[in-house]
Length: 402
Image: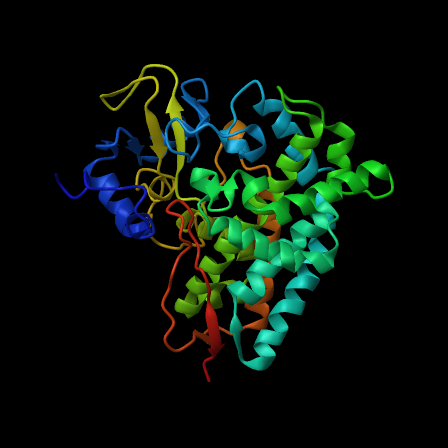
């Protein structure tokens, strides 16, 4: 067995070595059948096809072990196929990106970012993940959903506990199976919010109210279950991935003062920096689909029922799609869309909010922090989130460099 064939997508030591793993897969076996039956595709065009062609590559199963049955209230939108997917997606888009919803959060995002970053800089030390990105992303999502802001930091703790557990894979913890059994306080809080909105219709204009106004039974799931499922997804997906990305790009700027200086000198480059950062450090490293129709990719037959992994992190570094694919470049002209938010019918419903948050946080960071002014704290070791398909530093303690 050669080095590429030894690739294990569930070994976080391999998946978190993003650049090395991308080079290895793209060079040696861009379409790879593993001993466990999974097929891994790492070329940009192949990954794009797996992500977008939902008739051939179904979404059911997601990141779960083959055969695991997960009720709809515990699934993500990325694990749901037609006919349930379309109505759920419409509801989620209405909640996450209703008319003016994202822009209405921009000033709040900036003010919140200032309130979190300035004390770190005043003290001369702090943690850019634990004290900044975790709290910022959860407060923004809480504002979007109409959650009391004094509960947003508690929600951040709950979200961190979920993402650090086995829930994303096994849908269980030692407390039980499913969110309601595993995280009863978290789900109970959401259920209480929904009941409050139901009891006082029209009193508050927020995402949960919009959901209540438009949600209907989907399949066999009642409307209340659907509302909780979407709110849960917005709270977890809308905070965890952006939190991970911000940790990654802050670490990149601390390690590369010249890059920091280029963005600081020309703030108009902030959107390009966010997109390039997302390309190189996608918060979700790969997605899993199930082959529904016999097909072929570069001479390899893929049979119905086989699980197919679209290696987003590798595809985003495919030299056939990007010049200097491993370099953080601010001068790319009309680059191929990165796959970090997906594409097609499963394009991330919260992408607009995530981009806005990331732009505001990065803009503030380069304004407030001079290139080279911060360094990682003595003894810091970069550790990533424990789930193999998620990518972002667990923490990022920093101090003033001089």
